[in-house]
Image (tube, rainbow, N blue to C red; front, side):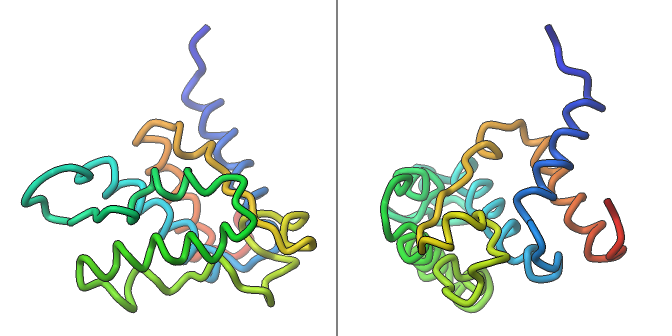
Length: 151
């Protein structure tokens, strides 16, 4: 049975709000946009010689997914992002969100329970969505930046 676009968007909207938790959207955007950027460039340029973006060994979204179950996933995700940033002269641009920040324990986008125990869990559900769904997620987060009371 095919899923209606409106049902998909509604589900994505709820997922984004759940993932964001109580974190302010202006801070959360750094996390979600970083993940979406790494996912996008990995899908488009991984293994492509002379592409617009160089996706180095250890610097792709697949490398992030390989970290699932790793007790140091936050620190290791920062390293994956750093490799991609370094390979493309993007230091200070795509590596501003830190996935291993202890002071974000209650409002971290990777989930509250994981941080109470100083563990992270990478939510891979967005990775399985269509490009249109990912675009919708970006728009959803941009709405939160403009209108703080958006639901």
